[in-house]
Image: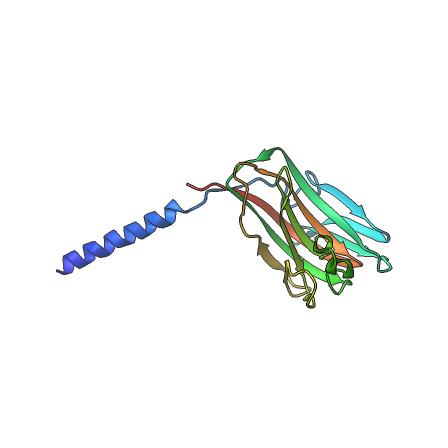
Length: 205
């Protein structure tokens, strides 16, 4: 009887492992220079708004860190955006972003008063966007402050001046692929550091 019990346990464990493997997703990191080892090579950088911008890759210990600072905005909306694009679109069943970053300072206390009327105009010190060839398919902010009621709630709060890791939820791209990813640093004055970005495509069995 004991041997039969052990055999049943082995069979059940095998079935569980097979089931987990059947739903596993082989992943591929399609990001170029996501650790900024070659500076900003492979990244398109754009900016907008008044004030003084500092956009540079610094050596911090054994890591390369993208450091972005905006000051002198005089409370005028602005941003820095780093992006990568795939042509043709990168294929897969889903896509998601991983980022390791630190928000040292943000002056804008909410996602912007204008975002109460138009949620698509929300500003965050770190704003993650993923695009298919046709449209934006993922839109999420990272900030250090909660929005009050009536403002957009598409964000997560992280402590300021602390390194954190964040990964987006897998977003379906089967049949379309992923065309572009953007990481925008938005608001009034801000100070943000990023030391790793990964864009994964995944395929289901």
